[in-house]
Image 1: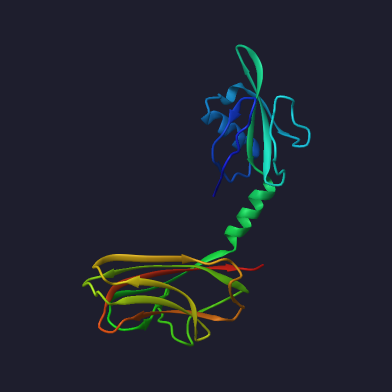
Image 2 (image 1 turned 180 degrees about the vertical axis):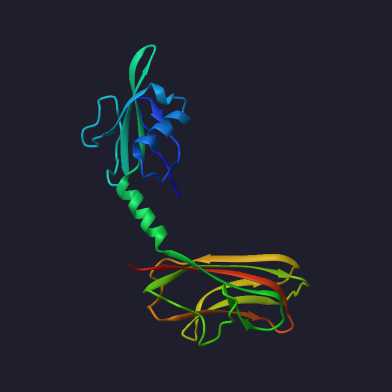
Length: 229
């Protein structure tokens, strides 16, 4: 997970993407090191009050809930100077981590040839059905679907659709792949959270629907779900 750094005006600036770090002091020193500041020359790292910025800092329209600034005191042959690093704030880190932690990928697929419409297998190798599939542990929503498969022979009028079923009922959100050319084909689609909802205990299964006379090989599908706490 990374966060973009906002540029400062009117002073020395360190800017790069920021990985999540539990140790802010070491992280800020690491950023400084990547920008050519030797760690043994860093005398102090402190968080800057965004409501009481130093005179040399000239920034407008900063949302203090999304950003944090750190001051680095560096000593060199010319004395001590200050550098400033801006990162995503701790609140923003927590928000992004929570969003990431609530997401889960469900694996579906079918190895080898698929010559007729069939329910896909779960990651455990169990074939789904209208009544069998993954049982949801929490309330949540479906937020993404991706499929990769192989077309051995082209079918100019053929399509493959990967359809989501909730408690045996088809959902409109799906992947659609045109089979007009042979080779590896893919489709992926996203949908906003809270658009396609499910409740704990709901059963989710996936089925590949093939046009008459078509066939595909090695279906790999990922379903992204976002749960509520």
